[in-house]
Length: 430
Ligand code: SAJ
Image (cartoon, rainbow, N blue to C red; front, side, top):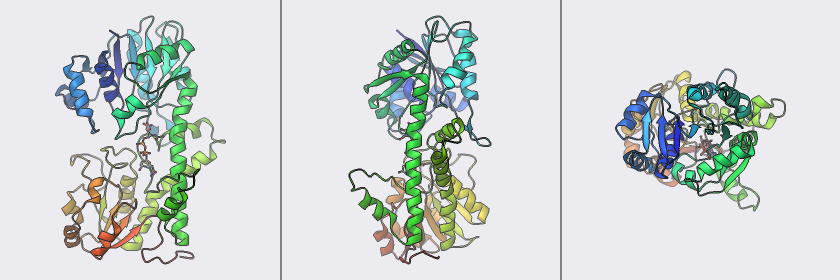
């Protein structure tokens, strides 16, 4: 029975640890957070993800997933801790990775495997992790195996993709890659591709950067479409009929702790070469400001406005780097009386720029309604009730996801990001 000590029971660590436990591994899940400890010790998954509660319950009941605050000796160590961006430098904050490496130092034994799952700048496994592990007196790549095996799962589909996605096993040496690949065969049904650690790190960051750049292009198309009076959504629908074109969806910005963060790792690694990547970040980061300027076309401060959605994308509970929250912050700064509403976010969540209210309270007497996150809940609203509650019938849809005909049937004036003025007037020279 292989024993795995997994450090970090967050969006990736908890489902991964549970998958290993249900695949017959003895898993010691480590997380210093009292909230995670309290919830998991009462069998509750500390993350809102489809099917995860069932998986965690089964893993804990199997007796093969034990949750604690300190690591223990094991055959393999997996580090799945956050690598946030330092907002002042736009560089990766590797302090959690370094701390995790230091925490396992006294526990390392010859023949152990250490896997870094966290997304990191290329070169981190070789130049940051391995030197720390070498302080144990054991040689990384010789006495112990070290590898980078980044997760590639989409929040909202984590369990399916953990199993089905192809996986990278990037070793400090080819033997390290083999050891890591062998470990993940426990539950990965996709192809496990072996490479070196730095290439694996680069691939992971490239994937998210590819998406960020493509979203930036879609957002730029939206800005141009508004200026020349074209409906970008219709234009994208038509363009995507081309066999080699797949334009992504514009929106209020790019959030989450991956796509909005990882491209900066490449900008940091190669500032003079990463021009497109940096510009794409800047385009996507400019979208919240643009949404607020569209709001200002509808109503002026201090009007009460209802902002629907605070998470970074639909059907998740994660508010990290959320563009919707950036819109809220800017709207508050502009002097609007902002009310937030999001059915996926717990009412006691802290650090929001405005009150998080139930839908009816958020909409009551609102002079404008802005859809910021295309949660399914917001697409099946009782529009007759909404009509009665709001102060005036102005709506801005930043995802083109509302059923416009139904809203217009109730005499709502529906504006959309990426589409010229709701009356279809061109914005050239506007
Ligand atoms: N977004 C758009 N338009 C689009 C697609 C996304 O505006 O057409 C926005 C979303 O609203 C959100 C952000 O981009 O704010 C990111 O959302 P996402 O669904 O594209 O991705 P994440 O961050 O939830 O997950 C990504 C995935 N990476 C890729 O698809 C390349 C996932 O596979 C990664 O594992 C994950 O990052 C990660 O953890 O790195």
